[in-house]
Amino acid sequence: MSRVRIRYRVDATQRDGHRGRFSVELEGVSSPTVDLVVPSWVPGSYKLVNYVRGFRDVVARGGSDASRLATERVGSSRWRVRTEGHAQVRVDYTVYGHEMITEALDLTPDHLFLNAALSLPYVDGHQGEPVELELHLPPEWRVVTELEEVRSRPPTYRARDYDELVDSPVDAGRPVVLTVRPQGIPHRISLCGEGGNYEAHRLEEDLTKVAEAAMRLVGDSPLSSYTFFVHLTDVPDGGLEHATSNSGVVSRNIFQPQERYERFLSLESHEYLHLYNVKRIRPRVLTTFDYTKESPTRLLWWMEGTTDYFSDLVLRRANLYSPRRYLEEEAKMAKNVLDAPGRGSLSLEELSQVAWTDYYFPYEETPNQSVSYYYKGHLVSLCLDLEIRHRSETAASLETVLRTLWNEYGKPGRGVGEDELQSIAERATGLDLAEFFARYVRGTAEVDLDRFSRYAGLTFGAKPRPADDPSPVPGYLGVRHQDQGGFLRVTQVLLDTPAHRAGVSPGDEIVAVNGSKVTASSLPKDLEACPPGSSVDLALFRRGYLHHVALTTGTPPPEKYQFVPEEQPTDRAKKVYAAWVGAPWEPRAPADAPSDR
Image (cartoon, rainbow, N blue to C red; front, side, top):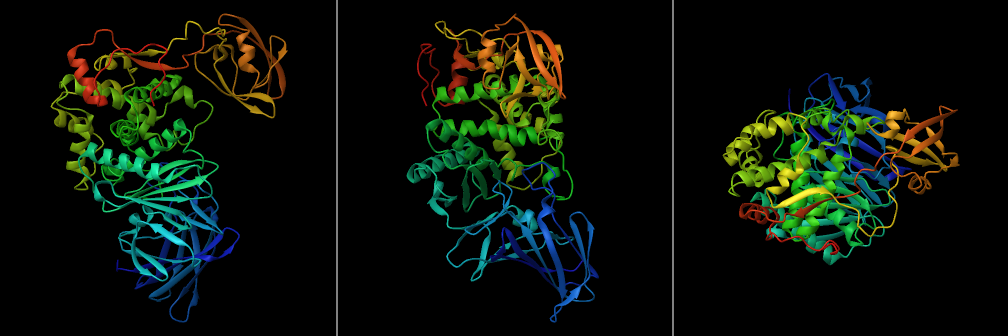
């Protein structure tokens, strides 16, 4: 197949509402037909999405006389253009874009956020060829992208191939752009959106610390530049990683108070680490992309869960978390796993493999049959790190495995095979890890977090209620619910709970407890009057018909978990703790000591 020159044009100066004008210009066409295909997913977001829904007004023309060419839609996301011998072909179309999420097209009077997969179809058979992107924008707008600039008027950029184009978002408008240089490498912080309670100097300092701690963790950086895209909005969406940037969509007021700001730093740490783990260290099946169908892998738990584990560790190494704060965050992650009745239904490898249909499409039974591969992958990675540090007497760690993956797979661009991870970890650490992988990665064994914690001189368990807490222990039903216009509608019934055993169903509308009216807001107080072991009559509407359900309330699960220093840890455990947390082991603090943030 002959090489074709491909140029995309985006016109944000003329819009019909949020509908922008786009075109694909091709030169050197020699085939009788050309297919344009809109992707159905983007790398880093493992779900099939109907990105093509906003495409309209597709018209193709050929040659210098711009004669109209026959164009046929041959699939939901594919158009076929009959070239009729023309070497030059231009396809014009419009796309509606008004969504500020991490993988988005957003066209407003003062902003363009462009992820190529949502608006720039690829030329089938030519995905590996260089492409240009030409932008027509209001003259006062500024463009922020990691693509190579080839012309300034109009702003024109080049990508090595379609994959790089998809991996390089474009933001244009009036952003506030800060620049820092961790390890001498320029990093931009592009803040787009109105408002924001951030402090610029603090943001510069802290994201510099995050980047430098990540570089120290891996021991290297492949970057010549990087951009943190931070979109300030009212409906936060999280982040999406790219090879030389990440796009975060966050609440405009996430930067204060401290606890909310730490959530922002955790997001940025996670997405930044992805420039290593996922974008360069990646499963072999994700080294080339078929944008039309699922690409399942058993390694997502490592790509996401282990990245998430390291993201907290990076914040600790950057001194953005104190040791105590770090352990609090790990305890919260453990609760996320322990609160899911379905945490043992599937192995981590299976959770990874079914992410396309499970994690991204939760429904009423999800907590009973599954758990997030992010959460469980994070927890298993923590335990694997402690296992390695303990058995090697701190000569090796999970960091050792990450650096080996980076040097042998990430830097050379080799994909990791589906069954290679255990052998890589064993070779990196010199340990036999077969039992650990069999039980916790390929198997469904419950993670004994207390046992692994003792390797670092800690114990793990539920945080007890304060002895002087006068509030009664409420009864427990085992339902998750939402307020629908003042009515309490059950959304999920958790496995092996009083409600589950009594036959309560998702969709039931609970209207009374023991004859007294109940609402979503009043239920916690109502259950205080029904302590564990109480007989309760629930009046509820099921599909519009009144029912009565009798049950006995249970004991609620722990509100919090905690890591606590052991009374008499071994010297080896203290050594593991110091190497892991980056601070000397300290004895138990008074129970009422405030959290050190």
